[in-house]
Length: 60
Image 1 (cartoon, rainbow, N blue to C red):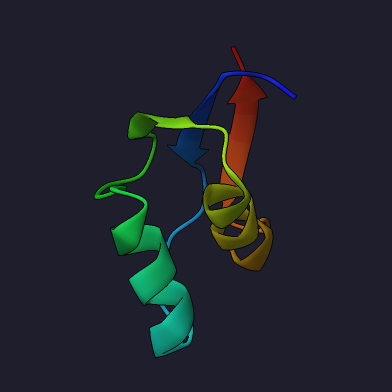
Image 2: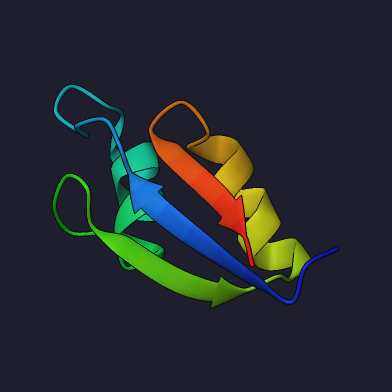
């Protein structure tokens, strides 16, 4: 596994369920095409799995 993950919000959260929106916000994503860097942990991987249809993940 990689040490860091770069996560980018590619699709809007409009119309998504509240839990999905909360996951996106907890990842630190605010606007479309906004990117954040996270450590590669099982917790972050689980959150990304829930919103995999909205984000793009790049291993660093």
